[in-house]
Length: 207
Image (cartoon, rainbow, N blue to C red; front, side, top):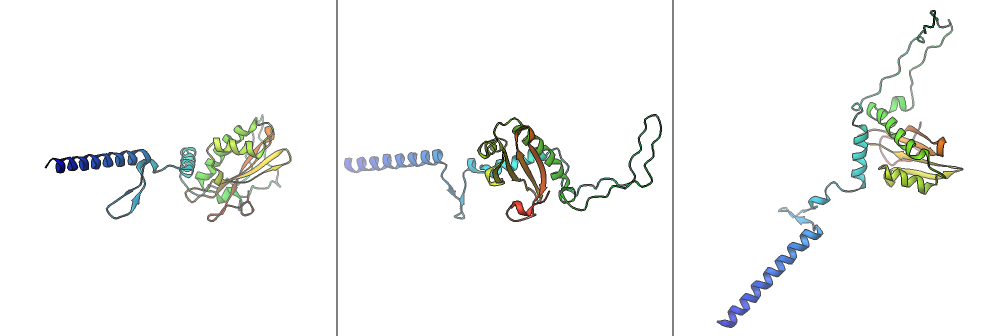
């Protein structure tokens, strides 16, 4: 009877030890769990993690003050506005009325992307403005610090004293991209239009 009780006690302690180790392992490592249907599910702390998710959240934050997606309104057409400076000036009889754009970012980007493009241009240009000797490595590091991930940075290369790059900012069906040239106080960042779908290539975009 004594030996049987001793063996039972040892088996009980062994079972409890194994259970405790398994629980610690699951808690520390975040091991994937299996639901009743046999499918593996990610641990709670892994949901929403990753560079792409952070990048999307950054785009949403910047565009939050912009209007919802909609075709941008074309600039008004008509005769040039008259100016009043002591007298009334009338436009010359051969004045040319401005023509509404038919191509380019003005008509291809929706209102949300058109608004967001200015915010992206400003924050990137300010970050690159004072950069001394803007090499591709330095430019990439600054873009990363701003939240632009490597997967969305394209054709990053040295061109004389400047470093040129493209950013694929397509999100929620938009077509926004940026073309940049980091050159100290001559830094330029401007909007461009990317294809609606498919991989981003510089040859397929237009400014």
